[in-house]
Length: 408
Ligand code: GLA
Image 1 (cartoon, rainbow, N blue to C red):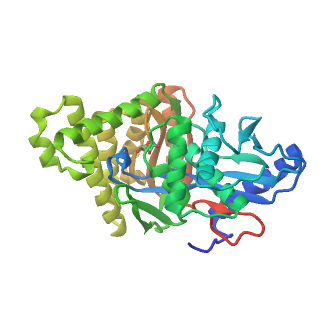
Image 2: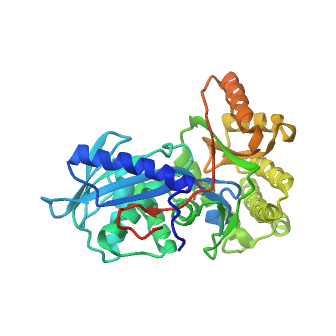
Image 3: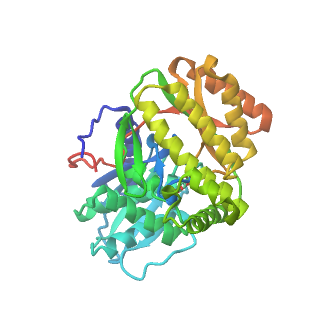
């Protein structure tokens, strides 16, 4: 557990939101914050749709946070908390005792799901009032839901004086997403939000759940996120379908996870595999290899190879896994056409797909020109305004309460 550096850019970013949340808590509920916590969104550099196949991923936390400021409720309805979301502009009641059920409001489900997980551990959570405030774009593929889940878990740790290991905390949040939001996600998003650190990428082995923090400190290389600002329907169903296609392929190959198969094994089983399951498995197995290779190249400062692996990842997600879309393809093509001469090292779609964001690595000096060219050409090609911004590997979940010792 590292000591929190309050002067780091990510802490400053979280503290700005924390100040606003304290103010909102005062205004909305007329009480001063006793607890303030923050958890970030994430962007994945490479290793897409590999987590639920037991493979490797290489994400980082971004300097966009979901912050929750909270206070004990003075006249408590003993079994509930009142939570106000500044983004939605609405307040909701969260049950603190059984029965806790999935409701119709998605942001409430994430909070309720995490509370249910903590209560299941035997924690007793006293009534509280809270304000949730976030600058992680909603539904943009930057894990706004994991940020909310991990922030909620961090808040409940602070309120109840208990603590979970980072792995248990991430798994509790993943379970909340499965059971209360109905999304059968892997473990990447919650692990990133819980355990990432500033200046580091998280190389996570999703089979063993062991991880390594890989330094990302070259001042000449920046991470740029481009939000296509499109979100195509069917995402939930398509995600679950990809998972079952992968399980089907693993079953035919006789391995527990696609992680356990090689491309040669897959090739020799081609006749026994459904053609769709074959290409899905080809993406996953090759993507796992690319992720390991990217981490190695990154350590060696071989940016050219990292960039090539990113483009290859995008092509595989587009052609074999079929989770890209015209808008994401266009963003990647524009980045590629600006190219190494224009300071672009590599680019690919990131997250679940069907819209959302691309991630690009760009030479520091070239970032302003890259942002303006990408914005201009994307707008011209789609009539949609993208949101493009540089970010940096940031600190995972934090307890920012006045009396808190440091990193959550
Ligand atoms: C979503 C899921 C993750 C992961 C990615 C694809 O973000 O929540 O678990 O599967 O898609 O890599």
